[in-house]
Length: 151
Image 1: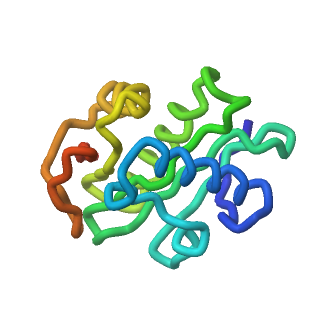
Image 2: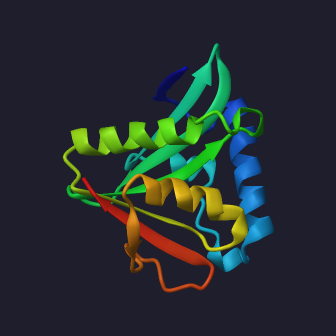
């Protein structure tokens, strides 16, 4: 498996991101969905990676620079066929390493409070994230949990 920077507008990635957005809207009220569309993920302040095995898309993740010291994890998604293989953990570890190498001291994220997001919350908490308040324009929301980790 290889993790490399990629274009969020590649056809297979578009399919994965459409699935991601669809699931977000199916499990959370629209005002509580903070997933970015492919064009937003291509912004200069965001680095987007995919995990692939023999060019088969396994998952994706993005890192948004908020400041020199702070970054945000965005759009982490594992392809349905690749679930329960540890892909999300490998992507998360990759992003944590990249954030450290870029000099960020903290990485934060927003995820859902619904049962659908339980596995994601477990992964983040297991990697040292702790609950925090809203950051970078987010507001308190009963459908969101905010997590952060010092690097």
